[in-house]
Image (cartoon, rainbow, N blue to C red; front, side):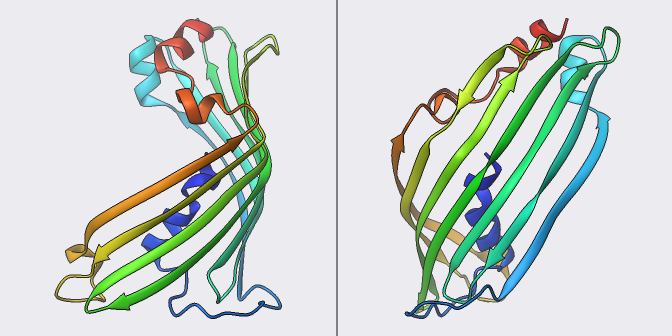
Length: 194
C-alpha cells in the first residue's frame, strides 16, 4: 500500500510545505516522476523458503505536491516474486490514485498535522503462477487523522522529535482484504512458490 504511506513519507522528508493556505491551488508546486525498475535476490524469503527467491519491481507514475498541503499520486506497477529453481511466480499488481490533504500548525515547538487521505482504484491484486487471483483489494479507503509531534530543542533537527499523539479513523467502501487482514503471509508465499 505505497499510496497509504506517502503522507507519512512526505511529512518525514519535509515535502509537505508548512503554513498551509486556504483557497484553490492552480497547479502543483512540485512534481516528481515515479519510474523505478530493479531485480534482486530477496534474502529474507530465500532463507525462509529454503530456495532462492528473486524480487522484481516495476513502478511508474507521478507525485504532485501543492503549497496548500494537497498531494496527488497516480501510479501503476507490479512486483514479482520468483522461485529461481522452478520458475513459479507470485505477482502483485496495483493501479490507482491517492489523494491527500494536510494542514500543519506549529505552536510552542509542537507540530500538529491534520490529514485526509483517500486511496481510489485497484490498489492491490495478487496472482499465483497460474494466474489465479489470490487477493483482490479494491474500492475506496479514506484515512482521517492527526499527528502531534514535539519538535524538541532544535526544530530543524528531526533526531530529537517525539511523536506525542497519533489518531486515525478509517472509512472503507468495497472489499479491502489487505487493509483488514494484511498482505500475503511469507509462509504462504513459500508454499505457493515451491
